[in-house]
Length: 117
Image (cartoon, rainbow, N blue to C red; front, top):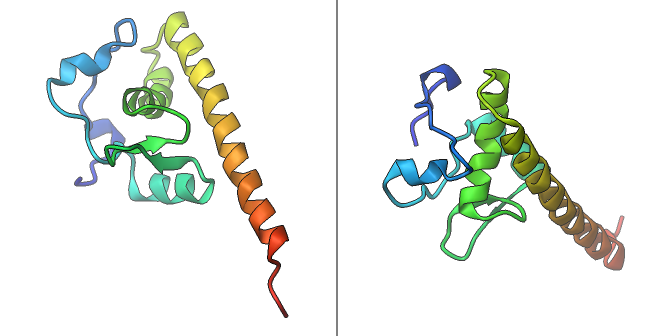
């Protein structure tokens, strides 16, 4: 994916959380985020891959992940509804539970085999 500034990215219509149907094609392998956003999210253990190989937000499906990453941009532009916000918050709660579980598992593994100095 070629980097484009946020202002140059296409605008998707969000209607009843089915805005992905307007894309008319297969889901992308990577989420539409910048390299720096991807690096930050990866470091925070916020990204994962689904069984089809799509990059996803941890704990979310491909469709949910795309909605999730596009929500903030659309919200800043004033193009979200109360329903969008409720949906986003539910996804965020589910994502954070999974992300924190991943971090907890990593910490357990580190505790089980601490580095030798």
